[in-house]
Length: 204
Image (cartoon, rainbow, N blue to C red):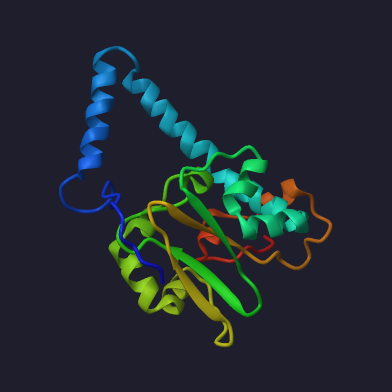
């Protein structure tokens, strides 16, 4: 587990809003009041974010499965590799961690909800919950079982703690039987939860 000393994104936590959330809301209200942007435009932008961004991660991983050289670059410098695909990420660092027959990776933000939103969209409710953030560190296999993911005992489970300037994405193993698939076909079996590490891609 890495150190997690950073300003917390409390937008989805209990308690009063953070200074950053208050400033964001105040700026939004000021821009609306001055006619620079409308509430409808903000709502539409958020819907567009939710619609488009979750598919970015699937596109990156499908390309990594199809192109071993890109996969290596992704593991060496994930942010730079994503830039090759025209993706501009918000975090200073994006670290791609690869699942192998010996290691299964899972991502958490133990103190808030840091998450590669530019790749996966908005974090799901369970990811932001205190229950997940607390338990996945102490008993990751039990939490994964609740998602229907059973990790064999001989496979090590590594939990990676995201921070404000360092996010993670899991590179799952490519399922057997997909050797002749196109990248578009591969994208369809790559889910957000698999890129967080709580599930494993499977042929439906």
